[in-house]
Length: 323
Image (cartoon, rainbow, N blue to C red; front, side, top):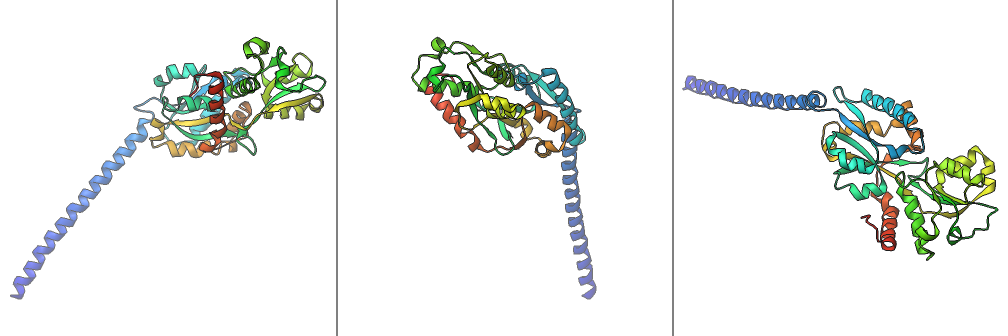
């Protein structure tokens, strides 16, 4: 009886060991398949697919020499490449403007797209964008815009600028200040801009506009607060001769987004980690200087509240297309 009992225990033990062995082999097989899948995904970044692209619009650099900007971008993207996972390839992709981007973005394997906040709100669904970061000054991501005049001019309100020579940046570079000024004009119930505000100069950088006003070649100029304060710091005489007629609320200028395709890739967290520490690298700081950015910070939807209000008011007054 005792011998039969031991034989029974041994047979059950073998069956149990075989059962555990089969489970262990299945586990090994599953892990192997998962690792194979991960490795194949990492390799696909360069072996099976083209490199991921970082989109740059020429209109982002209208206040800087475009060739200098492209040289800085080349160094920046190379720095980006060096800090990322092995096998993850990046490249800069250039577009002339938003229209060019909308027409040709599907031809590129884009990872990151930076747009003005106006364009971001208008095209985020069409481009399948996932917002991640925003440009910021030293203390605030929102930019104020100023209508600046000479102190010796008898100009007390926006209506007094009718038929005056006004300088402003091209709307393609940053649509917000032009929209804000349009709202001021329409809200003030002055004559329509195309009839009374028809002497507009738009082909200069902000620094050139401020200098033109300083030397009496313009009656007013529309510029960012950052640019005006920078010029005053460089030449205090500008601050003594020029004054602010109107100041806008704070508006978010640029939103940087992942494409949803890249957001769902295995590389998105690594790239996001790198982008948030760009100020640690010389190439990143050079790019910041070109785009007048002190740092980049995580996106918050509340940063766009004033932009949404501007769009709503602008649409009511101008019956425009912006959504």
